[in-house]
Figure 1 (cartoon, rainbow, N blue to C red):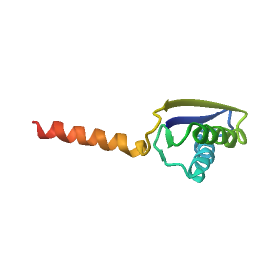
Figure 2 (tube, rainbow, N blue to C red):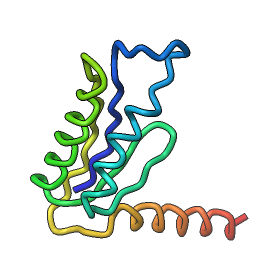
Figure 3 (cartoon, rainbow, N blue to C red):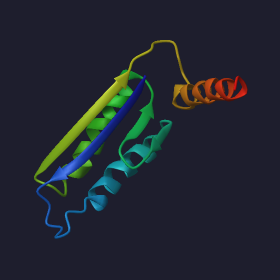
Length: 105
């Protein structure tokens, strides 16, 4: 399965409202998990079994809880049993479809 999630602390003391230190703590959990992962400006996506992914999400939230009194979590999952390598595979198929569109012009 693929899980895209974002975790944000609520109620921090940073005067400019920045949350990058707390987010870094969560992303460290993700990267240390060993699961395939990708982080962009809005979400982190991981790939693994249901239990593996939920453990990483849980532990990432716990890391943010250490620096904030409240945590916001947004999660989206693509549950497709029997498929692996979809973190990159979905993008590769999309790129191939775009190439076909470009060739047909």
